[in-house]
Image (cartoon, one colour):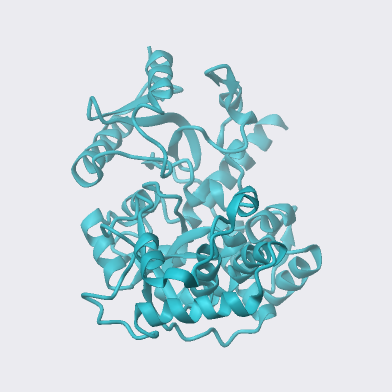
Length: 401
């Protein structure tokens, strides 16, 4: 029975891998197509969006940056108020999902006795400064960073003193910018055009609002989530969507989902899953720890084979950590090792659980070259740096012997 259970887990891992397009099925697709089929790429000022596109379709940074500049893909606040890089077809309805987080930020100002009329006036002033909702063209849009905006807005921005600092709102500007962005009236653009940093400016946008009702929007997100994952538990869907129990049940019904063996699935996937078999040949990828394969369900522990999750690095058992502290090396959904990029050595420091095969060695070299040539470094998040990850690089080198 134990062997059958392990086979089932291996099949489920490979099924999720297939649904994520990590088996080569998305080769030749554009960036917006990849993000539509495999899932939005989590962006926290790190390089995950770039590796997401490279691992699935071989898209290099130059092309990804061109797609950002042309608004074929863009980073927006959406599910749970978190920022993701997504395709143009999803902009309006996905942005609607993040309005609750923007409103929560504005409610902090209510507690600081800032009238809503004052916030609304500041929103109008921001739009005036940025060009009254009219962009100056896709090649040279009017864009100002927060300091430039604050300088131009003058007394329209109010300092909230120590009381505001304690609540994370030193001035009224961030809340106004959040509300404007959530409504699609402005958008945030990376200062140097790159997704793996967190220095932004703002430009007017005027995105047309989604015609979907809140119920239809939630159903669409559920349909996408189940399609991206190939199936998820009720708890996993709630973690990603932040829907209430009632909203979750309604969204599952709206998506026409079926419960199969404890997983909620789309009917088409339930049928396809019955005939799915694990590919015999290796399919090696180096992914970010925040890749959609793991983050959409926050189930990295499920991707370790029996025994591998009990391994330890820096005194922590791998499978007991909610999120991967290092980036994974993966074969058909199974995590077979961990890696970090060492920019000083211009190499990938890695620890493989088993002896390397030619396919593993080849893929490590390919990703190493991609990072060196396209990115220069591979940060997990905005504050990640070579010095901050040196301890983990040393631990991986030591574990690898």
